[in-house]
Length: 265
Image 1 (cartoon, rainbow, N blue to C red):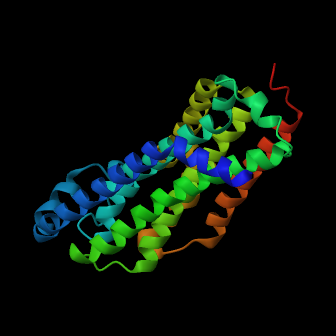
Image 2: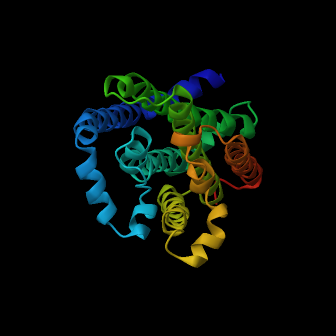
């Protein structure tokens, strides 16, 4: 009985999953296609990037821009890819629970002879698997395309950067899931999740510029995922484990809150 619910959740998001996957793969492929031109004119590009203020270079992680790791860090993993996965995760996480209440199907769903927590867990798993599926597309595009673009990055570095991105997406999807369980309103949980995600992202981005943000940057999930510079240094198991732990904490809180919540309220 739970498998149909899992499949229904995926079916509800199928167009979105395909759209995010195609868009992510296309973006990465275009960036990889451009890289040989960047690498062939490395001296001129390095002079241009060096002309930017040091704070700007740090903010957008532009160190050694013409190297494979520097290029991917600046063009993909410092801004676009993390925000894509956050946007994708919070949109699906916010709707996983709230859609049932707003569409009037919650009473019918929870009248089934299945504990409410198991239903919620299945819906959460469906969202996590969808985010991971798009993450696999990201990783595969990088793993296949990077050698074709002349990048000598190791598979471990590409995997570490992709995994960090997926885990951040799952964390904020779980936060939206929790807020949806608390409020039962998609717009509210989506809005709050985006605000909190942007706050964490701004702390991570502006830490090189603002002393206060530098002192609290270790509270940002983006710092946990990218602070070790995975495209250079590979996996940071401790910080990635922290992302997983916070994600599971959000799930646990969502299950606890929703079990006691009056869905008719």
